[in-house]
Length: 254
Ligand SMILES: [Zn+2]
Ligand SMILES: [Zn+2]
Image 1 (tube, rainbow, N blue to C red):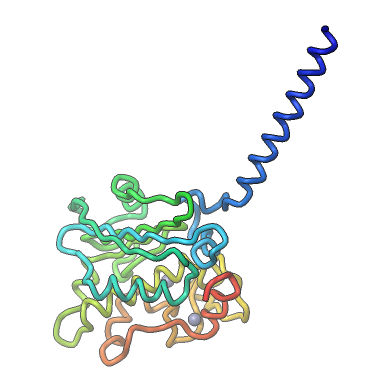
Image 2: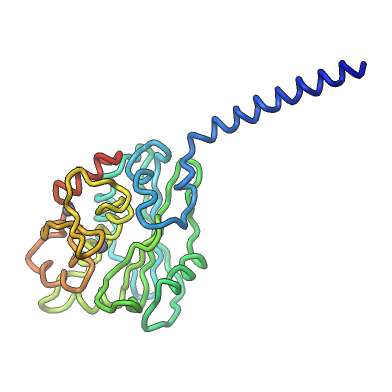
């Protein structure tokens, strides 16, 4: 009798182990990295680009009062993402107003706090998410910067400096400047340049960090500074050059 109980225990343990291994196998299909929204910039590049872990994308644009993006900027961002990402179940871009924090400028620390107090969408099931904050001030670390990509699914845009550099005489339209900076910062989340999407050909402008060496490319370093404003008068929103496109395709994008 005692022996029988012992045998039953062993059998149960084996069954339990098989069940456990079964579960574990099932969960191997979920990207362990991109389950988190607090990793370093570029860490989820493949999850954005490919269909391997997520077939749907939700982008949440959270703007402070007075800085609602134009509908054309939202549409342009969505088109850019449709052009380069494999997301067969769709890409949606939502917008929502958040309170002003009333600061003249914002540090990266301030920005991560604002994100955690206001962001509602996180990666879950088949949906990967991104958050874009539009702040009513400048970047504390560099007042010429229009935007930053600061975590694997997080972007901040400095609405005050964008407003100052667009919409006026001899300035580009708000939509043109906004769209350019949205697309550029999202390019960093997609792993450009050499930031999570390996380079097919070497084209990194190492003097300027994770940027492209082609001056006409969306990922050229001046694109995220006020320097881009004058270029945009008489020019369209910059696109990715072939080297940047090749990197996205090699990492599961299109
Ligand atoms: Zn950049
Ligand atoms: Zn490029």
